[in-house]
Image (cartoon, rainbow, N blue to C red):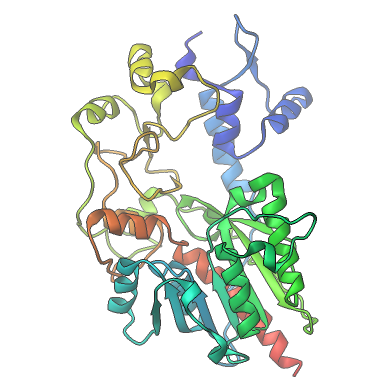
Length: 411
């Protein structure tokens, strides 16, 4: 049995986005059967079988829907915190919302925002230093992709005071000062399990304390919203308690875009990706990645090179399916990181042994080609890697507009 043709239980679970327990249950029920490794008797899966399941899952596990497009009945305004290079803001703008002010601490991201949207009010600096009371009752939605930080709990209190010093505290403070009908927080999927769920519990408790009912938290998969990337974001939606209007999360689309859609002329873009600067792999890494086929990763290397490349990680558990990974043209990209050549999160071009360029990065995040990024190459990668994909932001924007249309209809 040649192990490079097989994936472990952990690797399979990571690739298809299911838990190991789900795979064990599927195996018991005969829905997706594993084979047994002859020495250890561990469950392993033929790689081809996993790829077929992944392809079918992407095609069938998504509800078919018509366009989520909905036009605003009024001019709706957004105040955005932790705006970065503008991923969410562009998406909301494309949906029809107006950004009245954006706060961001990174100077290069602020330069990017100013150079692309001179009409936007950019509040550069630490959010702690700004007073937002001038926007009180004048903004329809406050948004923010606050970093995930643990709270210092005082007994069983999970209130605003316990969050002081964290950036979520600042998000909640601004929401309280502005008093919008709806607020939207976004974060990485890991927030669900951060501090065994207590961090998210605390956030919900704080929003409740300041007068907002939190909708059941959902994880939105970017690939279901016209983004050629397997990126997941948690969306936290707070509705002001005096408002009895239902909020609906954006409905997913049936069609899945892949890397070719991102980088070549087609439905997503009307031309091939423009040329741009990009990072390079060191020669030692390039020699290794030259041996990896499209859609392959470190397990596809000869065993001696696997051990040398992985070092001590070779003997540890976990799938590690993003290491020495070459993306295929006919699949969505794995989640982009802030540094395309960093150790053990390789996202290699399908044909050339190199990381994706800056503009290829931007395409995979569905930025428009005319959105320019300021700063060094490293700074530009960081801005793009941290962003909310534009097309996902646009779908969130439509869901906000639907809510606000319904809300203002009742006034």
